[in-house]
Each structure stands twice: as structure tokens, then as C-alpha cells.
Length: 231
Figure 1: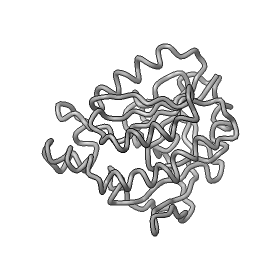
Figure 2: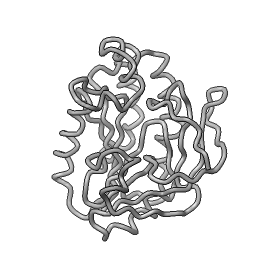
Figure 3: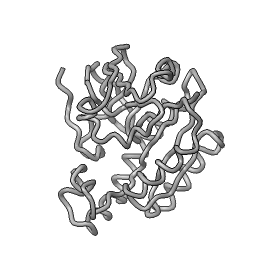
């Protein structure tokens, strides 16, 4: 059994489907302007700061090493960032794998295909490129591996943000149906739809262990312009 982390690193939406309306950047811009802003140096530099300091080490420092990580990147991602990502994952060959996709529709299709080859039981866990998880996440989530088709949501975490180019940790929060580390047994977590509505059609287990996720609040770099969470 293993945990399969799935991350979309600046994968563009497809303007031909409803994914366009999920993110503020695509919702408020035409396709050409959207792509320019999505892959702008200012935005990607900010994204990489969160990825380097928060997301990447939170997975590679797991106490339980029974995991692998699929990172999906765009064909349009500037070469300097592709090279940096390749260098970061080099020590983790076989555990962290980059997959190139055209857009979110392509991502959904490829992730579905990849998971067909996985031996059950497995758990897929969503991790956005600017968020992080506790270093005991894998250890805790594997306890649910016998509950096929159940969703697991850790609800207690902590806010994070950039200050002087360094990750700072803010107040502790309680957030049901959040996306950070949202997981499902023997299915693709991204096939279950919006995380805020995931409880409407799925069996969700809410785990209240403390400080299990780190949720970034940055209206400049968060694609949903994520606001502060109210307790």
C-alpha cells in the first residue's frame, strides 16, 4: 500500500470546459492574456518560493517513506523552471515523477490512466504547489487504507504566508473540506469534483489531529485568491 501525492504545478485550464471558471486568473481574463499572466516570471517566482520552502520539503521529509509523487507540469512552463524542478527531484528517482500535460483536461485523463496501473490498496492525496502537510501525514493517512472509496480530510492546520521571501507560520485554523492533503482510498482524488462540495456525494472521514496541514494565504500567488480562514 502507498500514498500517491498528486500536484498540478501551473497547469493551465482549458477554455473549452468549465475549469475556466474555477480560478480567478482564467475567470477574469481572455485566454491569451491568461496564459501570459499564468507563466509570468513574477507569478512563477512566487510559486517557486512556496514550492521550495513549503510544499517540496513537507513531502520529502515524511517519517513514513511509503509514498510517491506525481507532479504535472505544462508544456508551456518556461524552461528555467522545468530544469529547476528536474534538479530538485533528481535525488528521488522513482518516487517523484514529472508528467507533461497540455491543460487540466489532459491532466485528468493522464492521471486516470496512470492510476489504472496501481495495485490496491492505495491512497491518492491532493497537494497544491503552494501548500504543505505535516511530516507524519503518510503515517496517519495509511491507517485508513482498508476503507475503500472513503475520503479523508484533516481539518486542523495552520496558516502560512511569505514574509521577506521566507515562509512564516500564522494562526492555527480548523477548516472542513479543505483541499490540502485531501485523500481518497483506491480512487483518484481529482475525480471527485470540488473539494468544498466533496461531502455531498462521498463518505468523508474528518480527522481532527492537530497541525496536519499548512494552508497558504496569498492573494497574489494563490490561484483562487484564497482569503483568510475564519474560525
